[in-house]
Every structure is written in structure tokens, then in C-alpha cells.
Amino acid sequence: MQYLTIPVTAFQQNCSLIWCETTRECAFVDPGGDTDQLMAAVNKQGLKPVGVFLTHAHLDHVGGTMALAKHYQIPVSGPHEADKYWLDALPVQAKQFGLPHCEAFVPDTWLQEGDTLRFGQQQLEIIHTPGHTPGHVVLFHREAGVAFVGDVLFNGSIGRSDFPGGNHQQLIQSIKLKLWPLGDDVIVIPGHGPTTTIGEERRHNSFIP
Image 1 (tube, one colour):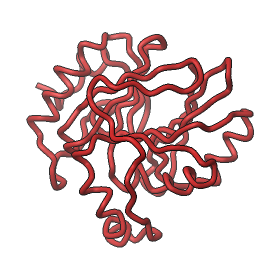
Image 2 (tube, one colour; image 1 turned 180 degrees about the horizontal axis):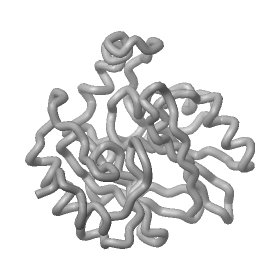
Image 3 (tube, rainbow, N blue to C red; image 1 turned 90 degrees about the horizontal axis):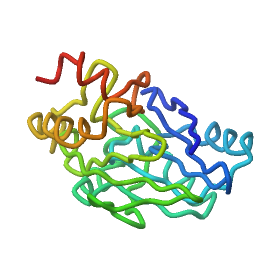
């Protein structure tokens, strides 16, 4: 698997373009916006989009979803159905943050713990990680040792839990019980900011008791 992380929107949210080197099939992970930039990256790499994968339903992670899904005629997978209320509220979210109008939508597939997503010859494992939002999921590529963790864990920090449906204790449990066991060498691609590793955060992240 290859990936390219592209910060998008005023929130500098990390959208990841992931692809299979053999088939050139690719997927967008959390396309928050700036879809022209994302489509340009697809063209530059010579890729064929086959899906949009969402870790959670906050606007800065999903704002470009339907534009890409309609343009490429590809399905949307994720997040967990517990985030449906956030997707329903997308027009309100956009108005609150002064961003362009964003229609509510329902993904083609809700994701659950233990599900898998495929693109080309690659596979992602789905890990349900509530706390930042109740329906947050992490996408883990075991062979490459890469986890796309959305807003659960950051380089030197953790996700907010003060939004509606957030739960700090759940967030800490998700990190310690779901992410730490993946292994210290696993590369963490967070929803914002620089890349890190499980080992680095387990040893040095002061927000995690």
C-alpha cells in the first residue's frame, strides 16, 4: 500500500489518498474538502478511485465526500452508525463554522468493529474507537503497519471529547485498549498534524494516563 497525506480546508485536516501499487485502485480517507486538490493528486499518480472511507462524521473530515462520490461514481463507507446524528447535522455544522453549505448524506455502508475494506489487493481492518465521537473508527493496514486514526490520537495529544456525544473516558479506553495493542512500530496517520507512531505516543503522550 502507498499513501499520500494531503492537508485540506482551513482546519488543515489530513485527507489520505491510499492506493494499491499493483492495480492503481485508490480510496480517499476523510476528504474534508478542497476536492480539486484531491482530484489533481489522483490524476498525478495515475490512480483509479474506488471508494471514500470515513473515520467519523465531523464536517472537516467529510465535507468533500459527496462531491468525490458523485464525480467518480464510487461508494462511501463509514463511519459507524453511531455518528449518524453528525451526518444529519452537516448543514448546521457548515453554517456554524462559516463554511460552504454541506448536504446531509447517508453512507452506502456503515462500518463496525471487525469489518474490512478493500481497494485493489489491499485490505483495511476496522476498529471501533468511540470517545471523540461515538461512531469513530480507525482504519488499520496490518501488512504495512499503518493506522489512519482520525481524531482519536495525535502527535503529542489526543482528540477532543467535549463535542456532543464525546466521552473522555471512552477516548482513553479506545487508545489504550484498541490502539496500543497494534504494536509500537505502527505508523499513526492522525486527522491533523504530523505523523507519529504507537510507541512514541505510548511512551511520551502526557494526555494519556
